[in-house]
Image (cartoon, rainbow, N blue to C red):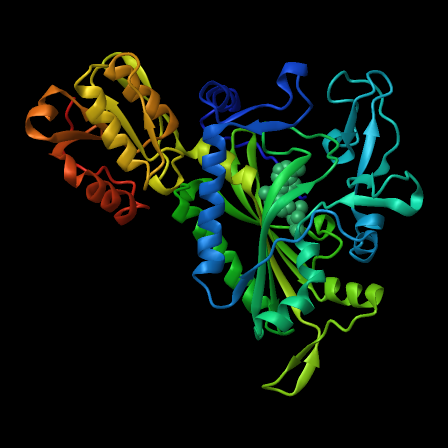
Length: 455
Ligand code: GAP
């Protein structure tokens, strides 16, 4: 919601990112052998690892390292009354216009009161279009069995407020967090994985005492912006934008977007909203349950306010790929590099024997088998070493281990660092320890690990 795309754009074009993703197995068009399904993308082996790294980092920061947060995994299908109470049945819609000539449909805001952006044809009057996917529970397709695929994971956390309070013995302020799929029948999906109809969210619902909400809102704005910087996204490509009154969601008292400079312009990466007591009051009203909180310290009972930082896994993945993408000339050839921070890199280490050989292969395989227990590791012995380095650079692998004939004599291997291309030789039995230190010890550093650059 609330995405605005001004003119500035980042340096990388989206085609390059889409092409890299397809070529190297980050993401493929969904159901491709049937000609694809509009705006659906399937994450390949590297895409899955990248998304997992993002989710792990988010879970680590927001749950594991905090005393005031707990996790939840609520079901995608929820009681249909949930969506009446939440206001989504009546209010979760976009104004839609249709071109009378080519019949393409647009969000009214995109057409901007003008003619069809595609063919210039005349547009119909706007009508409201509900973005929730409708489905039926059970074998009978009738009105009574209608339910919806959730358009946000948030509601699962509101309806479990009482359960969590009773079982976790948390006191305000505290938060519930979950990661999961959400679905919206977007009128104009697009820009690769930026806006799709099925996507994954990482949401926090942070419950606070009314009156302290603005202070907590500011806290989460800073916390969340810092998190993207710690993931390795360049600060100059991130900004905060406050929602105007006219674009606030039906539940929001106040909202800011963390925006990233995507190739098509500045656009929402994460929304941070002050939802007030809207959701708990509504669910209490529709369910008949008391969803207030008894504050032992002040001997008061009140309905907590909620601060909601809501992020998208897919958009984070896209921003990381765009931000990390780089090209440089090396010996007259273009080297494509994904300068991902090591914790985000899908593959941490590649083991590359200099050649396929009856002596080198067993040693390289042994090293590979040992390393893969601790690091996502790839083994590659096809084509020249230069091409193999390029393949790993292109997918962001921070370290390559090369085993050569000298290794058979001196039990040493070469570690090559992705960004600087610098190389050092170290004893094979110190590989694991060295890699662990390099990957964990300087996880968020952009500095080359070795000052001297060797070919
Ligand atoms: N519970 C609040 C909420 O859902 P939102 O701003 O509509 O707020 C939060 O969505 C985040 O979810 C967005 O910042 C974005 O990262 C992601 N998101 C929303 N719609 C999306 C879509 N159609 N495709 C991909 N990601 C989407």
